[in-house]
Length: 296
Image 1 (spheres, rainbow, N blue to C red):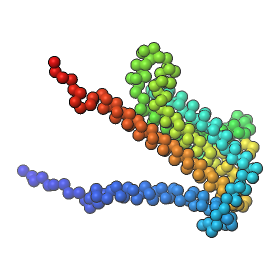
Image 2: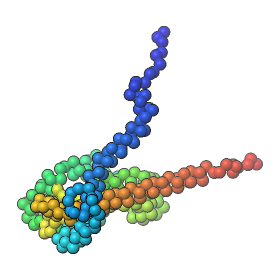
Image 3: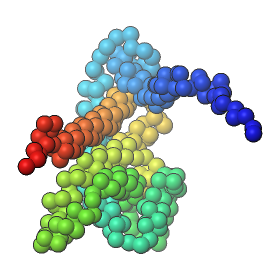
Image 4: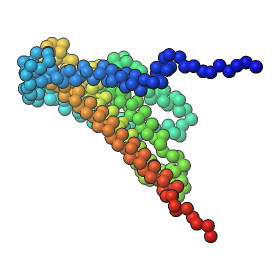
């Protein structure tokens, strides 16, 4: 009879079992620094009083004041905000319709493949191909509308994935029970599904806004009259880098990070609230100790 050899973890496994959490924290911190340091450095440089690219030797808001007096720059800012708002409305609406239809189709894999395909296409290729299709084959002039089409094609997959994920919390049995009791599909969606997927809709709207506001590649090939903020910055830095560009870039960074942080905090709050409600309902169903029914 062979002797059972006890399992002995290797050196790496032993190290990770003791210090795995610390390693993970360091890894995440380094990743966050890699992503956040360049844009944060740009924000810091925007306050340099001399307008030189260096760590500020003196603090000033002069470049922000001059930025808001630049008519071309402000037109680009308002255009980007308008594009982003329209992209949010249309992308979230379309993503919601696709997500609702996704549950009823038999070709779920095909639907997901088609919806997420734009994520894997380079923005330059997608923008150029859309430009050729619209201008050369359909005879459409490049206008605000063509830019909007490009932005929606970029934001729609992300909105769809966020909404579809939130819809996984919807129990179809509850919806069907409501319809059995006389509720029509719209009433069942409004009273049962919408409150559950509302955080997903808000998150999809935030992501769509940020993606549209910062979009450059597709906008570059589909742009009509007047630049957006990314194309305005690109046009400026190809000629000369001025302090106002640092202020505009810093404003864009703060707006984008602020919206993402807001969305993250909102989802965290909703998740904790839902967990507390679920735990309270579970305790209510179990009953409090000492309330067991006495035998007759």
